[in-house]
Length: 268
Image (cartoon, rainbow, N blue to C red):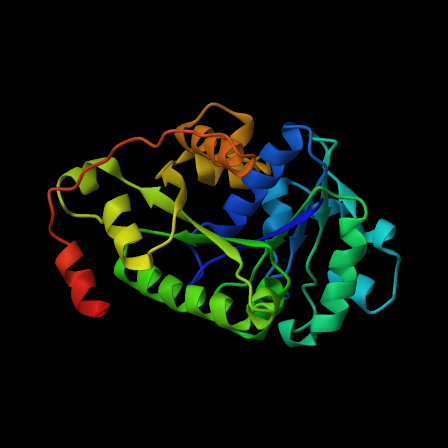
């Protein structure tokens, strides 16, 4: 049975598309048939992270508007043959998305794929609601800073209120990915620890991804870090294993305190 996973965040620039690309590659490497769909209409960059920007002919809007067949728009990844990519449009506005058209697209994708990963626009605009509406699971990418955690808390509330599952008395399964974590700052009390973030957001953790300079070079080369042996690449491999049901331990990073009191005031 197919699973629709939306990767989302409360603000831009936290690494949401990077997470989408690496998780998609990892799931495909495990033998699952995966499609990554870029729903960030007008601001696409998932194509560059995957190294597929030069192979785009049609996009997701073309498919939903009937300008091409789904098979014409899907791009097979160059390195991982179980992975396919459906790009966003750069020339359309995200308000062009329609819930029923999105539903038809997802139902068509379910016929051929084990996992459908939707790279959501950041924030809570119209395109975000379409990306989370049909989700079975949401991975909320957050960085350990005030604005990111606060905005993610709001996004979680919207998922719980406005998804199709919520409308039918059910719930979207939700997990947190903490990105760009710097253990040395956590230990000095200058950055929130994973416990601090989870105490605020009250959701289970599925991934801790450390700050890693190799992410930038990987993005520039169009080859996600999960292909290598970097710290962040290994972190994404562990996330994939957890998504597949494995029990994988988390590294323990303890804070000496310092920032949590600020967050407690913000979330009273």
